[in-house]
Image (cartoon, rainbow, N blue to C red):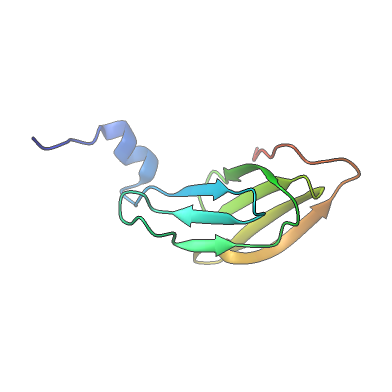
Length: 101
């Protein structure tokens, strides 16, 4: 029995592979394409404490991460995602979540 993809899912993904970012207690994040491989596509390092929250930007080209290290990091590259951090914001209290508006 085959599976069909709903039209709203096709529209949301733009026909591109689904991506997933996991934040870990070893202070790293991994990007996955679960429909294509069981191996991570990228490993992102830079936080020095537990990661609290990870979000994709609306255009899917940037990832924001928040950590107990009091940092919010944005991860991106011009053609898509990889492990290069290009912007870091430090705060006076622990960052617990991130949101793109």
